[in-house]
Length: 281
Image (cartoon, rainbow, N blue to C red; front, top):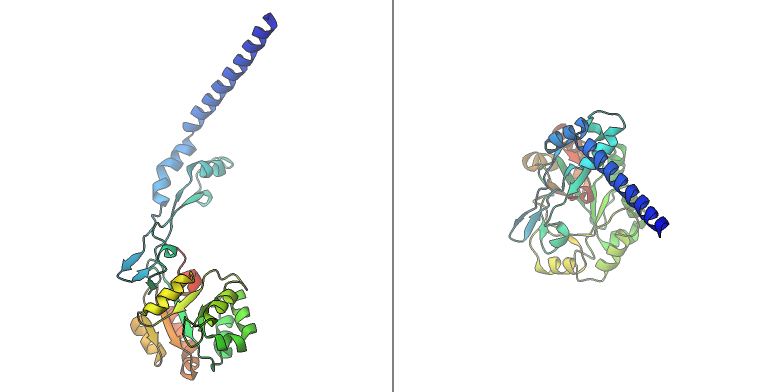
C-alpha cells in the first residue's frame, strides 16, 4: 500500500511539473516581442472578403480575402528571430454568397477590384482558329473560346489542347440550343479532359430556357456586357473596364486587328485572363 501511495505521489508530481512547465512556456511565448509585433501588425495585412454584386438576375462575383494566421506566422518567424512580412502565413476569409449558390443568375462581369479582363472568342463551326491560337500562344496569353458541338466534333484535338494549356472553353451546345443533348456530352468532355473545372453557357440577353437548363446542369451562364462584331479595337477602347468580359465574334477582321487589340489592352495595364481565372473568388 505504501508503494502505491508513493507511486501516486510521483505521478502527481510529474503531472504538476508538466503543467507548470507548460504554463511557463506559454507565458514566455505570450511575452515574446516577436509574437507581440505580429499581433500589432496583423490588421495591416488583412484583406476583407468582397461580397458579389447582385442586381435583379445578374451577378458580378465577389473576391475572397485573407487574414494573418498568428500562430503559424510566429512559428515561421521564430526560426529567424525577427519580423519579416514575407514569412507571414495567411488563412482565407471566404465570400459567403458564392457563385456556386447563384447559378440561376447571369454573370455579366468579373470583379472590378482587379485589373483583369477576359477576351471571349465566339466561334462559328466554320471558323478557323489557327491564327488566333498561334498569336495568343506566342504572346503567352490565355483566353476563352465558346464553341458549338459541330466545331468540337471537327476539331476535338485542338480543343483538348486548348484546355490542357490553360485556356477556357465555353459550351454553345448545338447552335446555342441548351435543350439539345449535345449540351451534356460537351459539358462532360470539357470538364474532364484537363484542368477546367466549370462548364459555361452563353447568352447575349436574358433567356429563361438557357438559364434554367444551365442551372440544372450545374453550369454558369455568361451574359457579357460587351459584345463586338466589327471595329474591334475602336469598340474595346470605348468599353473596357476592370473585370470586363468582352465577347468577340471570330472573323477575318478580328484576325487583322488582333495584335493591335492585345497591344492596347496590355498597354492600359489590363491582364488578360481566361474565364476560369477571372471568376475565381
